[in-house]
Length: 387
Image (cartoon, rainbow, N blue to C red; front, side):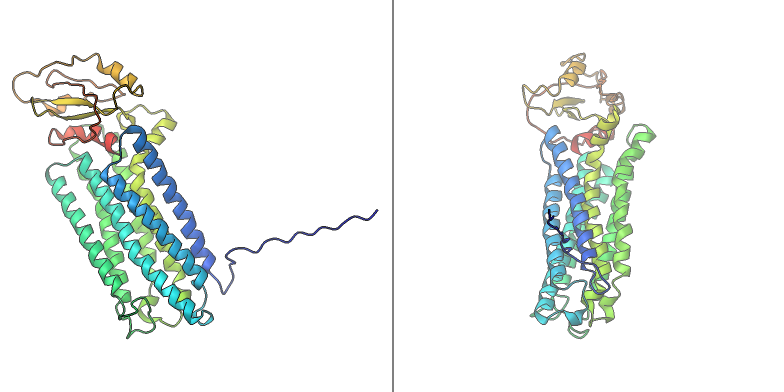
């Protein structure tokens, strides 16, 4: 009885890697870090919807994530057209398409980086918006906005019109190298500033050093971004003098660019992911409290009020209600201004300890914004509400 011989043939890879084709490396880096960014943004939005509503910094970060998806598509299509190949093997039509796609991707990259930075600035603003920190945050945000506009315009007009995306010679596109370096250096400096800003944010907060370190470390993960941006600049020397084989020499800088963009999105989400880590570890410290209440100044008295952030009838905050019922809802402060240090000193282990210097009121409404003109010590509570 004869047996039928069956043979199977492995499918060819989508992006074969060889000595003359490195496009697969760019696609791999682009897809992997896009997935990381999507997971980070998804987790952040889940936490946001579970606790309260979308904030302005969430919207800006979401816009940046959507633009990052478009930018990644541009890079992948460019790899299909000739990125990773030697330029003499790429047709004139494909080379023109590659130029357009890389041109668009670099403009989008500037906007994406700016979105993540401004998102973090707005997050810091909602946590602590007082004193010198407020001024420093405004200056940094304005500087980032100016850089985003100037960097985008410079990139748009980096080469002679009517084809600013096509760099065939140094005479036609003499500024592409300096403009790329300008954007990269400003990108690095602003990321470093964003790592320093949270130190000032937590400096005057009355809490344990450990909790200060945790909050600063969450924002400090941003330092990874300039660490991977530097290689993208050091591998871009071809922009100054090599116009004959740019489709081949661009591969390393594109890989580092996609890594830096993905990490930029992800690190902007990390402060909000602290709640997931605490839930997995069973932490009950104040940094893990996601109570549906917000401490804000009371304009009618000299104290603060405890405002419900859940809708009426919600059952998700029963434990917090139980803790709060022990406090009289009509307790009035003594004469003279309330002490901000004492009013939030006991905000630990999921229980709000309220002293007699403050006025406590419960409001079952949908208000999610908080006034930060009161004591700086409320920054601890604000951090967990707004991240």
